[in-house]
Image (cartoon, one colour):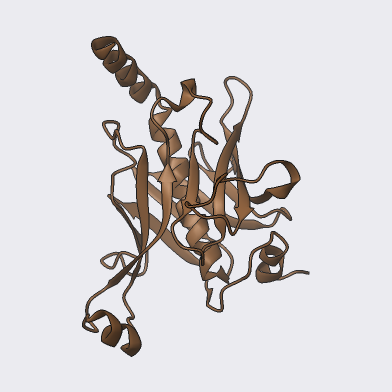
Length: 239
């Protein structure tokens, strides 16, 4: 059986040296925290994607590093106790995306640095009255500065397959890789958003998994009935 690193390598990615163990994560405001250390954010956004009133079309996604090396302390002039933020991705949902043909997708992610997996396009599917399923399609090693941002056809590969799991609960999704192996389970309970990462994986793949989870949550907020009603009222007022 392929390891997760080997499977990821087949998508065109080059696994990072750091392999992270399974973890339970929660979205807390604009931060992502681990269940084992809720006071120390490990990822951060610069905007609240769960707010109906959020009008941003691009949100920065950062990793918060608490174990700063001596080389970083010397080079960046920080102290050992100072968390270091590294900008990894841009999460994008363009204004009036549903009416536009000049954008690559209604929801997508671009890499802020070349060390990331690449650019990710979130595709949706599902019949009427059914919960939406998602596919995260990867254009390997592309960044925010590339034109075009995404490959087309067979040049893009399936990174994550995301499906509702009614057996677990109404607000549950199962995340799998391109081989159908379960990577994570996403749940919402008592207004808390939870991602249980089930497998060890390279750091850059974990970063992409968490960023895509947050993009999917942004989709749920922006596509909600309440958000669409507010958007329609705004459009009528100003146009």
